[in-house]
Each structure stands twice: as structure tokens, then as C-alpha cells.
Length: 233
Image (cartoon, rainbow, N blue to C red; front, top):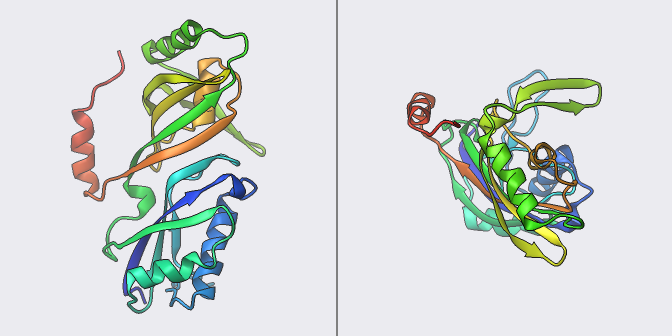
């Protein structure tokens, strides 16, 4: 029975670089159980703990803003839950904050709107003008046919509507730092590494997520807001 829903904000550091999305979900489950917190279970034939993570990151990416929603079968003090679970998370997964969310509110994956990234790409042989020109070309494009491969599956999609903004933020030594705002909706998500590929730049040295925007408004309200958003030329 779902009585309480806690939304944890957590960080992923380089120490978690070997953990995939499923590994992180398993780590949260183990930490909740080790902390003695009363996890609610699904009503499926094979009940499972009700834990939901926000949009997956590429393997090795870091973040300051990840989200884990956890349903409990009885109420606990959020501050106490944060302290207790934080003691049992693996290296590289750091619980930073927690607050209550309505039990019947939309799933966190359905509430995501966009994500911001700081991406570092190699700069050898590239001038700042060439990097900026690549950004300008992408933002000026009407469409960017792309494909995402996972194991034997290939998904074709148009990347352009999913890229909201890209900026050249500066340099770190010989590398360039890009700041990106990309859609992170349930059925419309752009990956930072795929966006770098579309720019025609070398594979990133570092992908760091700095912000996840969540909107718990009803779907109809979000769709209405989308009508007023600027469209690519």
C-alpha cells in the first residue's frame, strides 16, 4: 500500500562511473532496505519495490541533479530517511535532498521536461570559431535525422526538435566546454553524447548533467504550454 512518496535528489560522481541505470536503481533498493525504510511493493504477480529513477544517463556521465522517487507503505520523517539511506548508498551515489510528493502525482519520468548538461569535448585541431560554426549549423537545421543503437535494436528519430539550446561556454585547457539544454520527456529525449555526434565534434571527454526540470502539471496543461514555445526555423 502506497502511503508516502519521497523524492530524493542525488549526485553521481566519477566514482559511480561503472554503474549503469539498473545498477543505480538496485543500489537505491538495497540502501532503502539496509536503512530499514518501509518500501511499498507493486501489485504485480511478482511484487517489486516501488522505486523510480529519472532519465538515464550515458555510462560514465556524472550529475548534480538526479532524482529517485520512492514509495513507502507507512510514513517516515523525510530528513531522517535522507540521513539513514545516505549511509548505505555506494561510492559515487550521494543523496543530497529529499521532499514529499503526492502519492497520486504523475510519475517522475512523465513529469520531466528538459535537462541541462555541461559537456567537455577535445579541442586539439579545432578553433573556437569552428566549434561555434558547428553549433550554429545544428541550431539552424530544420531536421537532424539520427539513430540510436542499443544492442541489436536501432531507433530512427529527428534530433533537431529535441535540442533546445547549445552554447560554447569556454575552454578547459585544450578542451572546449559546451552547455546544452535538451528535451528529456518520456517519449522525446535527446542524449548529450548523440548531440555531440550530430555536431560533428570528437566524442566527449566528460558529460555532466547540471539540471533536470520537472513539471508536475497535468499533461493537458503541459501540452498547451508547448504550443507557445518557439519552433526551430
